[in-house]
Image 1 (tube, rainbow, N blue to C red):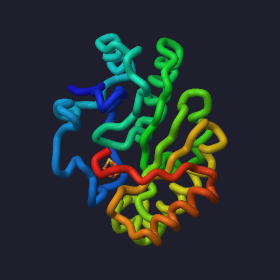
Image 2: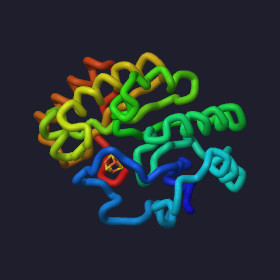
Image 3: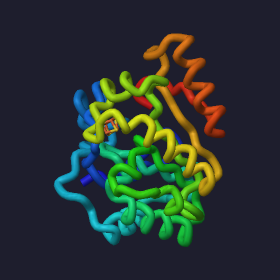
Length: 200
Ligand code: SF4
């Protein structure tokens, strides 16, 4: 199973294939791997100890960041992800980023933002669009039309607990006017806005 894989100067962590969304643009629909990682489809979810043991196989010093992002939504295993974050901080003291759809409050039915404190440095959330109806069309979130507002609420809340919150959209998918609206949403929340290249 591919639990850790390299992308550019970072080491990515693949802990689950679960996700409450079925995004129309999800790369999982058209490929099995990223950057020659080998298949990111897991035979089963690795235990926390198995994930920790994988780190022994890599030279952690050479990476800029450890990024929780695989073929699934990392916060589907938030407790376990945070256990691994604690291990990474204690053993390697590396910068940690979680790439998420921002729907963890809906997954757990509570405010999850405080759980990130002291363990995660950067939370990067897929904003996708400035419009809640369009967001649902794109993500096909199982939580329905409330998903967009819940994602923004999480983004605003988690800003209080981590150093950097980034909301991103994908280049070429929005009009200039829509990107301007996204930038305004980010400014209101106090998050950075990033237009990321396709497949990043
Ligand atoms: S949230 Fe991410 S993993 Fe889930 S369906 Fe969308 S793109 Fe794929």
